[in-house]
Amino acid sequence: MTIYFDNAATTWPKPPEVIEAVTRCIRDLGANPGRAGHKMSIKANEMVDSTRKKLARIFNIDPIAYERIVFTVNATAALNLAIKGLLKKGEHVITSTMEHNSVTRPLYRLEKEGVQVTRVRCADDGSIDPADIKKAIQPNTRLIAILHASNVTGTVMPAEEIGRIAGEAGALFLLDAAQSAGVLDIDVQRMNIGLLAFPGHKSLLGPTGIGGLYIRGGILLETLKEGGTGSQSELKGMPETLPERYEAGTLNTTGIAGLEAGIDFIVKTGMEKIRDHELGLTRLFMEKSQKIPGLKIYGSSGDVPRAPVVSFLIEGRKSAEIGGLLDKNYDIACRAGLHCSPDAHRTLGTFYKKLVRFSFSYFNKEEEVIRAVDCLEEIVKKNLTLPEGEGGCGC
Image 1 (spheres, one colour):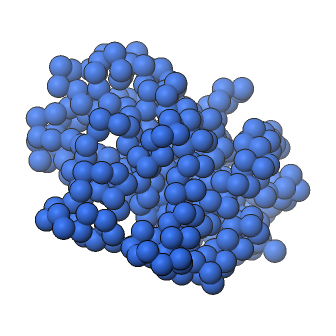
Image 2 (cartoon, rainbow, N blue to C red; image 1 turned 30 degrees about the horizontal axis):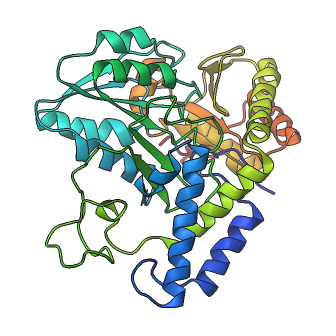
């Protein structure tokens, strides 16, 4: 049986309720939501609206503003819409050196088109000093775009303080909740979040192919795609009403159904209970792995807030090979490489060494963590290697 420690990429397994919801949607709600007046279409649209309302509750979005949650295919699409739809030539954006490529690559493109980008340097453990963000504010600062938790180190950024700084500067705050939605508390009102990007397939426990963007009232983004909306079809351009303005084309109805079931599971189980279990596994690995010669963990230590993600290397060994050995010899699925976050690895000093990442979910068990530690110890003590030509993945 596979031990799955790649939950920062996509959580697995999914709750049985999610699988049942997807199956039920395909079987009973196969019509396009909001595209017709027949019963199947209406029921599909009711399910989509129900999911928006449940997302609004867990993010403390004003209940009457639930339609300002726009569905996308993933967090990457949401971040692209937020960044490219907002920023214009001559405007200034502040970000950090721990960001995922879903933020750094859109900003790299916009930088070439005349948007000014300041990348605030993070500490060696991946943390950021809000005072450094405040120092980076300029008169033309339009946006502060920061991840909530690092997908490399699990470091949690001080989102509430950053949101306050953005508000005082008259800038918008974009929070990338790829590693936090569903496991860490997010309050868009308390944190002054203007734009919140989230995936459905990670800690919200939904299937792949679904994510979303919350757009606070008063913010109008340029569209990145145009097409059918099922309403206001007489307009030549996209309507200004949400969510239609940003949802051209048929929605991933089955993905949304699975996402709703994932949210229901989180609410029923309790986010705090889920978080405590996942962080308990993280602490267990950090404690037990100390016995492994040459193993070094990167990121914050102690009792500081973190996500259930831990990355490490073993001195003198290639991280890609360690990940490959865990997979091929022990059936342990993890991620070795740059984790689509090269800037983060430059910050940590691991760009060339790369790291092995374990990320835990509610469905992992303590015995799996202990088993993984024992396997790593065996790899080191026996100096196990992969056959020549099988270097593992270091992507």
